[in-house]
Image (cartoon, rainbow, N blue to C red; front, side, top):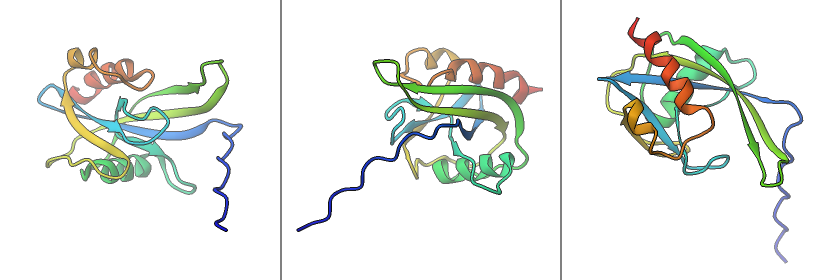
Length: 148
């Protein structure tokens, strides 16, 4: 007799802290296509959860490296946003507080970890994509910070 699969983990009662990184190059921002839930298949900035004892900047650098293979120096703060994943009946399945940074990175990105794909997009091209909540807004806010 095989063991029963473990029941799904209940959603945390408190918001989960995460980071994302906007890397700009030649007027385009690097996005990853999410390979896992929540928002599987949606385009997003590279990023993920902050680990216990990890600074926000270190988490941003680690997540970018894990998902794209790109290394960054000192990331700069852009914004914070709430990403709330709701079921069709409105039930909250997950609540994430995402701290977004921008940084310069050299090299060619390669999708890895939970990124199904990665590509460069202009702001206008983002309009035609299925994205994570608030992506266009935070990407728009990151552009002036990067270029200043």
